Length: 92
Image 1 (cartoon, one colour):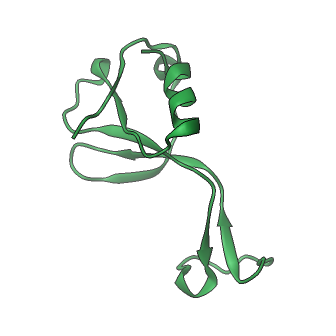
Image 2 (cartoon, helix red, strand yellow; image 1 turned 180 degrees about the vertical axis):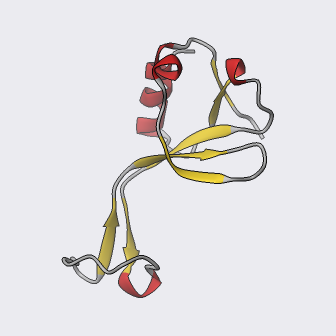
């Protein structure tokens, strides 16, 4: 599957997880976190200068779970990832 196809799936179902067979890592996958809000009292980062209705808005982003369990909250695909045709869905 191509990365563009994965993006189209994420637009409808952001919780689905995908990996590349070409990565050669076991138990490594990526999923899409859509824009969401976190209550100000639950937010652990610096307080934004502008809060709307007591919530912090978090922009959409990719999250990768690495084989050692490391959570990468700012994963960005490399050019090779975007042009690869070896994307598969992770079924648990």
